[in-house]
Image 1 (spheres, helix red, strand yellow):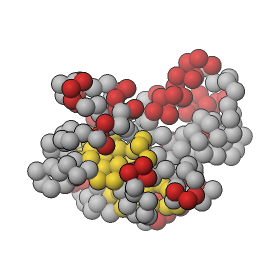
Image 2 (cartoon, rainbow, N blue to C red):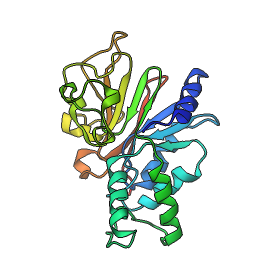
Image 3 (cartoon, rainbow, N blue to C red):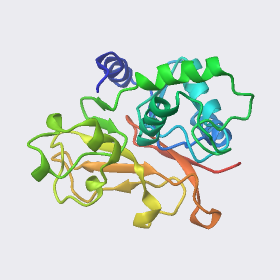
Image 4 (tube, rainbow, N blue to C red):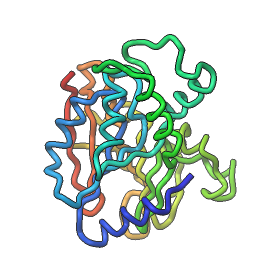
Length: 243
């Protein structure tokens, strides 16, 4: 599912020379997210968009989602953990037994009306954004033998596939695909302010894919952090976990 309106907003921002920061998986670590955004020195017209997985695993999933609901220039895609929350809601109507670091982890008291508002917000999130030079998607796409083109792939592929890290060709000849979902420490990227870049290049020599999920919930020895990349400049900024 795309949001043509959001795509237009993002592309216009890029064309105007404003910053568009893309953030990887947050997983309920609100304080780390706030520290990262402070590092970005956001201007009045700058935009931040998360690739999904705002929730689950950290101490304040509700606080993270509320931040994206309330702040003017914050947007998000849907991730597989948001999709799992939607599935859980269908089964339990929000009355399930939830852990302190699960879908509904919250520093503040959690009200039923807040849960309903959050579910409506998450339900409407897009699963991919297509711009002139970039595709933004939570997980990626499946290897082409399973489909004839990207447009025929489903949200299941966009939310769950990890093939983008192993294919030997660019999925999109014109656009760099930026993904979260797969922790790049698995590919040896341990340093701050670093992301995973595919060795398969586009005609303009840009990487065909970039991975920015830097494992915010990992053990401290694996340098858990949240990372952002700015689309116009390619600048990368990360923030170590503070919780």
